Image 1: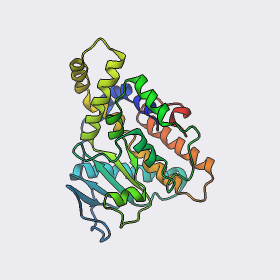
Image 2 (image 1 turned 90 degrees about the horizontal axis):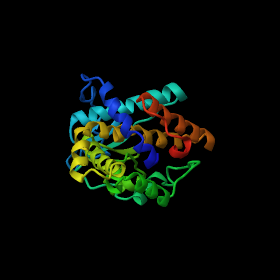
Image 3 (image 1 turned 120 degrees about the horizontal axis):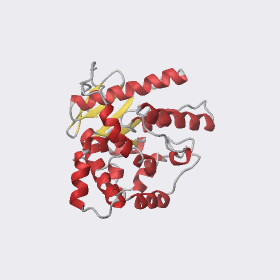
Image 4 (image 1 turned 180 degrees about the vertical axis):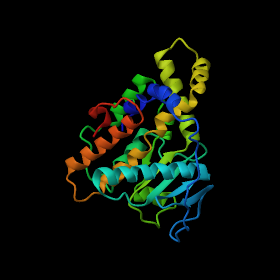
Length: 270
């Protein structure tokens, strides 16, 4: 998913936040299983929440419950649309105090295009230069944009994180709500000042802060996408075009199910 496509979720997210059920607060996972011997029970200050859907590293049970339901939704889609199983994978929930897994666009693309995962390449891949140029055009600061991104975690990166002794069919890192808020506000400030250069940094920050949860939605809504990409790339009996079409259909499903305009196929790369 490209930076431009992500940016397009910001304005509609302001409307979306008004439509979300006020009583639908976060809940802990409904079922917890024993910690497998191959995985550490703790990763820094994160705990392992082992659910029927996934192995989730989170700082608290509410964040773990949110991601457990996200994985269940993806599994339901996979079963409904493709008649297959998602399999149980690993979710690492990143928080503002964590060292970033990817700090630059280059870092992010290395993970997104890791050859051990990416059997089928996108139809419209963007270069670092193209991506960075678009970010400049939109006034998007690179660091928070990359910081809040949801990422594929290939085996080499899992080893770096201390999770190399466990083999799972997929693994992703996603932003917590707090990190999504922090990144969303920073991106919102940059985009607002690009569009309205007459307003001050302080004014833009105050405005973005008043819609912080809405700006966070742009990062939260797309969290399932790398998970599905990982799964689709692992379908060894599918030809390239079938993988591409499945990924493209899922991304569009994510946007539509959140009442957001769907970016063009070129923007989505697939």
